Length: 124
Image (cartoon, rainbow, N blue to C red; front, top):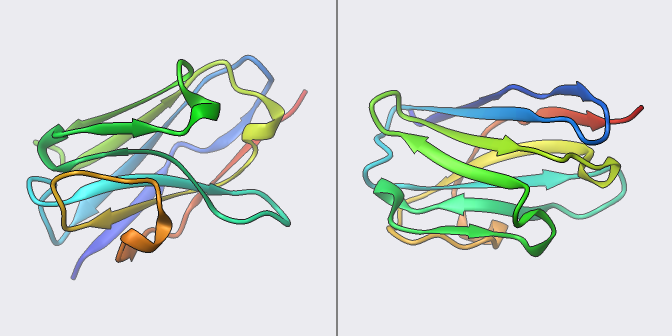
């Protein structure tokens, strides 16, 4: 059974950092791209970053470029999202999702499997 479990969310002050983890089970990241998405209250889900299978490619939304870094540990079958210089606008539920493709995109319709999400709150 294919499963994704996110962790690492929490409450952080503006300017702070968090590292999110997405642990995949039931499949190998060698053949799947992983995307991170977020959804704030009253807003649509939006793509944040993604990494292709075996790290073939990475993409970032303009609003996180230079602040967020996506990486993968294929041994642990885990994808990380390092988030630095966090802003209040980064608040939301962060989801990871998987798609069986080498190269990734930030459209949520491209992904077939989703985790339950982890809450990130940036507030003083």
